[in-house]
Amino acid sequence: MTELSLNILDIANNSTRAGAKNVIIRVAADRAKDLIEISVTDDGRGMDAELLRRMGDPFATTRTTRKVGMGVPLFKAASISTGGDFSIVSSPGKGTAVTASFGLSHIDRVPLGDVGSTLATLIGGAPKTDFKFVYSLDGKTYAFDTKEVKSVLGETDLTDVTTLSYLKDMINENIDNINGGYII
Amino acid sequence: MKTLQELQEIRDRMKSRVANRETADESDVRIVVGMATCGIAAGARPVLAAIGDEIESRKLTNVKVSQTGCIGICAYEPIVEVYVPNREKVTYVHMTPEKVGAVIARHIVNGSPVTEYTYSYAVANRGGNA
Ligand SMILES: Nc1ncnc2c1ncn2[C@@H]1O[C@H](COP(=O)(O)OP(=O)(O)O)[C@@H](O)[C@H]1O
Ligand SMILES: [Mg+2]
Image (cartoon, rainbow over all chains, first blue to last red; front, side):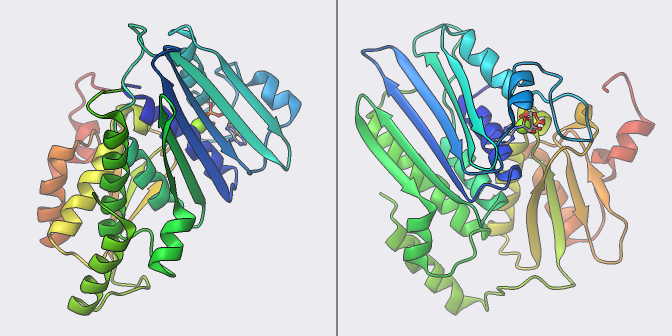
């Protein structure tokens, strides 16, 4: 993937496919530690120990259209190649947390990219799921939550293109505001 | 800075301007974008965004956009399927944001599919691209 935000979209799609009602996406960058940590946590159906064990192996998938699952292995490889750590914690019936860290200044680390577009795509694709997104750089934080969107807009159609495009821009503006010109 | 309050105002204005249909109906055109790993890696996210932008700028109210998982022909991603009521499904392959304008204008608005972008065309004229 050419942007970490594309990995986030792909990993969070696993969560919605697993029936998650709530998905929490965290992106935390720290220049002093030279690190970005990304986590996707859900309350979906989770994975049993056997599937979890095979997770590091690109031939693990429960889908039927194609025999190989590659989303998780790609994300893991992207993280490891920048000197980062990768982990999945999951329990059946409870949910899953995928966490990956990346060397911020590592030459092989791709840009974070268009996170607003990733969120808009996730929300439009699973409007009943609630997405929380927490972004921070050096401890300065921005939080977005579809629960808040729903409480402000009332019972609303979150698949409406105008709404999604506005949310995309709103999220990106807030991230840019925290970044103050620095590009992650 | 954009805020949820401003978004609410925009939506209120839209509601008073056009009768905002909340429910899907039979005459709706459906556009489905493949958003599995292979689609995302090939560029499906900006394709979906371009479809949304085009629908918004043309103020099309009878089009529903959705996403699906793996369509099974990963080498042809990004893939966009168009369902017009009473017509056969049209599958567009190797989509880009640049191709979206033509698909919306010629197919969705004027009713004639953009043959050169379709799966059947790509297969018939295959030159090692897949
Ligand atoms: N958040 C999750 N919750 C439950 N199961 C998951 C989750 N993420 C991944 N899995 C399981 O791991 C498999 C492999 O995931 P992935 O590498 O993304 O490939 P794919 O999504 O194409 O199958 C999935 O098919 C699914 O069974
Ligand atoms: Mg996946």
